[in-house]
Image 1 (cartoon, rainbow, N blue to C red):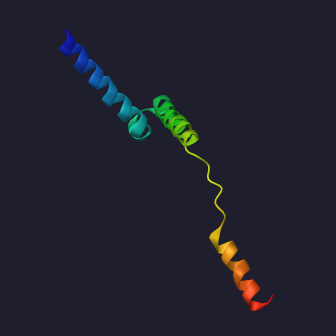
Image 2 (cartoon, helix red, strand yellow; image 1 turned 45 degrees about the vertical axis):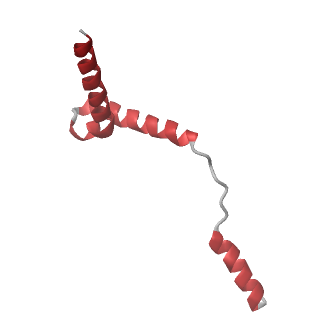
Image 3 (tube, one colour; image 1 turned 90 degrees about the vertical axis):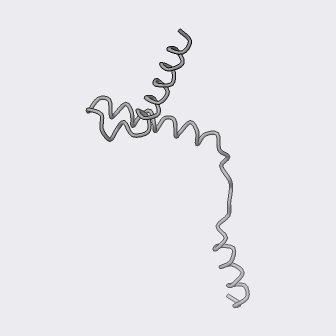
Length: 72
C-alpha cells in the first residue's frame, strides 16, 4: 500500500513539473494556457522573494568623473 502511494506521489510530482515546465509546448489549447499562466505566476512569486537592489549605473558615475577632469 505504501509503495503504491509513494509511486503515485512521485508520478504526480513529475507530471506537475512537466506540466509547469514545458506543458505550453505540446498540450492542447486550454491546457497550454493554464501551464503558461501557472509558470508565470510561480516566477512572479519567486521573484518577489528576491531583494530589489538600488544599484547606481557605474557608467554614469564614471562620466561625471571624466567631465570633472576635462573641466566641463
